[in-house]
Image 1 (tube, helix red, strand yellow):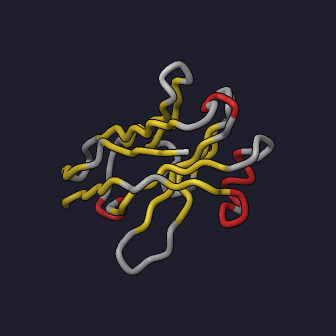
Image 2 (cartoon, helix red, strand yellow; image 1 turned 30 degrees about the vertical axis):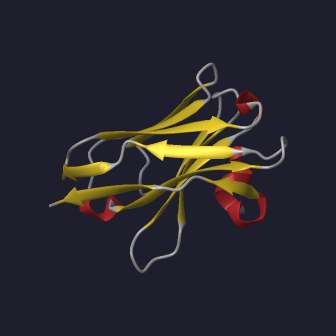
Image 3 (spheres, helix red, strand yellow; image 1 turned 180 degrees about the horizontal axis):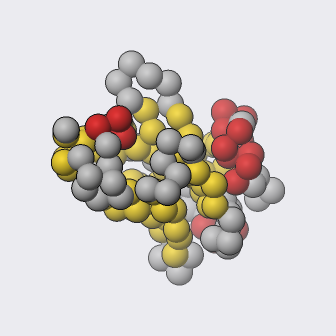
Length: 129
């Protein structure tokens, strides 16, 4: 399984970016997907997750109402639309996928260390004040 994230960049506070994650190597549409981020000197943290159908989504409290996760199974791609960006959103963003079909968005949010098997290389998002 390969995950390739893109779409990061430098943006001013209040601006928007859309991240994309292209997946290959297995049937993408069967699996939930997640986005995570890691700021310098901090641990990796959960951002958002989406079910295989797109019908269930979850968000970290810090991004709720500003970020929207979505997916296009025909294109094997998951997206993260980020609006009203803040300097504290600055981080490397990673898309991630579980190895098992039965992993839910709740599992990804609460126990990702146990259920995430595949990580993309990450894309840098920098928000200036």
